[in-house]
Every structure is written in C-alpha cells, then in structure tokens.
Length: 168
Image 1 (cartoon, rainbow, N blue to C red):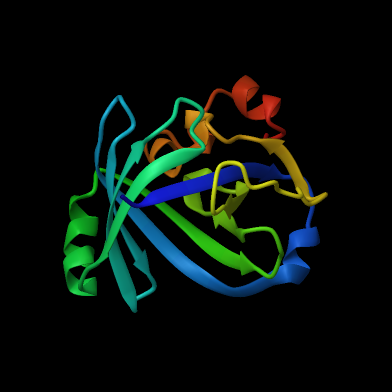
Image 2: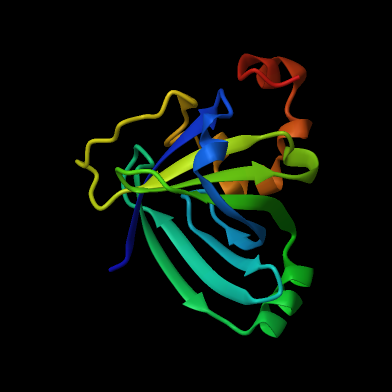
C-alpha cells in the first residue's frame, strides 16, 4: 500500500530560494472530500502531465497518509478540472536539500501570498534538520491541507485567524 509521510511548515524567510529548482505550475482540483480525510483530486502540471490521486489519513497526527496516484491523459484531467468544485493553483519549487524530498509551494489567487515547505520522508521516524527559513510546523493542522485551502482559501479566513499566522 502506498504511503505518503510528510511534514509541513510555514515559511519565515527567503533562504530557500537559493536552493530552488525550476518553477512548476500546478493546478489541483478536488473532486470529492469526506469528513474523515479521504480526498480525490486531479493535478495538472502545466499542459504536460496529469494525475488522479486518492488520499486517506493513516494516523491522527496527519504525518502519514495513504496515497494512490495514477497518471492520466491531460485531456481527461482538463475535463475533470471543469468539474472540480474546489481548486488550488500554485507554483512548486523542488529544493536541493539533504534530509528528504523538500519542496516549496507558492500559492496563487485567494491563497496568496501563502508559502509552504513540505518534506517527504522515507519513514515517520526519519530525523529532519529543519532549515532556518521554516517557521511554524503545520503538519496535521487540517486548515493548511491543499484540500482545505481549496474549499476555504486563506483570504476567506477571518482577519484575526490570518493575523495569528502572520498574514494580513
């Protein structure tokens, strides 16, 4: 069974930019989501690749999830995009950094100016050296999942809630 083991962080600095690879434009449309954390999404990377993904929580902490991802034709994904009631658009940067597969997502539209760092790990016990430009860890905080941000973008949060995390 496919597992995704991931830790996530809000960013507090720009130090990651010197480690960033080429920008990848991503669109994610959420076709279904359940109260117990099961999501079905499509992801498009530009006009070149697309995937259908099912995710489901494994643990209560939010560190480990089942993830089943399948490449699909871009034309099918474009059709599904039009059906998706909730969407996220972002630019992803893969980072040249030891200690796991690190990426930074720069969100657009109603989720801007949000920047999140994620590190995928081989196991939940893998130690992680957290870079200085990572701030508050948000692993397991459902408000920050892409599916949640698609349904309730950052700009729709009450001002006090945004300000508690350093956003205006």
